[in-house]
Amino acid sequence: MARPATQKRPETFSHSLSRVITKRERVVVHRRGKAVAALVPLEDLALLEELEDQKDLEDYRAAKEEWERDGRKTVPWAKIKADLGL
Image 1 (cartoon, rainbow, N blue to C red):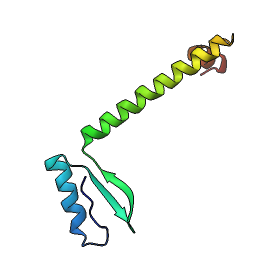
Image 2 (image 1 turned 135 degrees about the horizontal axis):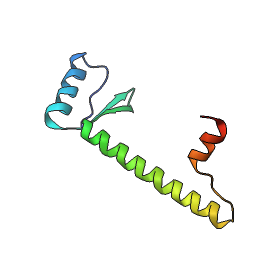
Image 3 (image 1 turned 90 degrees about the horizontal axis):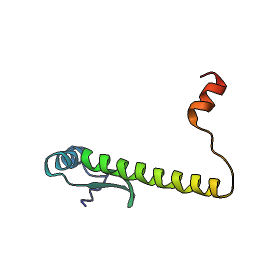
Image 4 (image 1 turned 180 degrees about the vertical axis):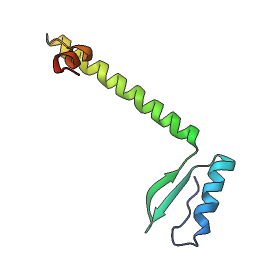
């Protein structure tokens, strides 16, 4: 991953962004020697979000299974909304 210094001229950001767009590179932005942000292609962001959604679903299923294993019952979201008049 490329590592531009933030104290360089302003066109450094533009150049880094162009590399992300045209060459599909990932660029980490540093401030005072510390990584603070990253520029990534949109496809990489979509993949990260999909992985995050899969992890959330796995966590939900594990929590629901534990809840039900302990004999507690779940309530469907539609019922909660109906009970609240939403």
